[in-house]
Length: 382
Ligand code: MG
Image (cartoon, rainbow, N blue to C red):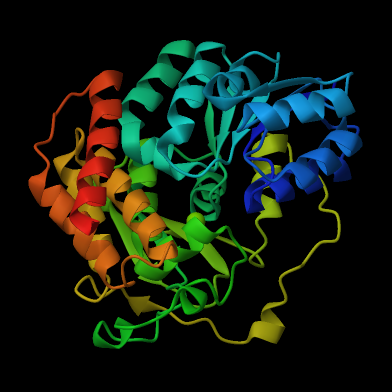
């Protein structure tokens, strides 16, 4: 029996690597639907190769053009199309790799259809982790991590009881500016921010790695996925990105998951779980070539974004939603050249100061916070 996979965000970095994994295992996986934005050339390529019955794109005009070219495929567009791809395809697994909290509603729709979620879209868990996890529990749906750190913890936890965990240790490469002081960040360019030393990722994620918001979002993601209090989640600077994360158990044993920095591994594990299957063109870990691994304590005054994320997580309610929305807006304004890099975390901090959190928010309160915070940050910047 092939697993039926639907994929949100097919033309992004994780999406394309997911398609590689699916193509490498035609007897295990079948793509039944995907969504993409405006990269229509890539959509054509994927459509011709995988021939899924349903595809959704961002714009109506693109959907109409593609419909003429591929009459055997059904094309949709916009928010409705995204939800149809997520929840209405008979898929066994939804791999959600969209960027940003736009992934929230389709994720909830899929959960309500009983579809297993492989989640690469960390903003969804940050914006509404309590709602997503309780809805998954109610519907008996598994949320499987795709983020390399959380996949590492998930793998290290295999066969163990989560109540015997004393702490989670998320490793952090440190991003493009890890060797710069806070003062030296003044005047860094978009190009410099986009040059990540270890991982090849989408732009938003690479900027988040440079500010350290990525690790902050991941701390909140880990809190929800593993039901772990913030005091028991630590971050550790590890420049080589070989240990993808660790668990310390109450008897002091530490379990780590290691590997070359290759996102296909956590993607494939989320799709094949609970099985492991061979990797095509494997990049095997050769520790003898690496020789030395380095670790450093994270400096929360240097990486203000990480401190803000812990603060938002501990406050809870809509505060992580506001933090995430502010960061999404600030990053897009940095990428558009409207604010300098060092102001990204400053705008997020100001937005958090202004936000009056709702402590047990429903979905409407989450969506309202998300929208209002974006507006507030946008007007601060203008
Ligand atoms: Mg990660």
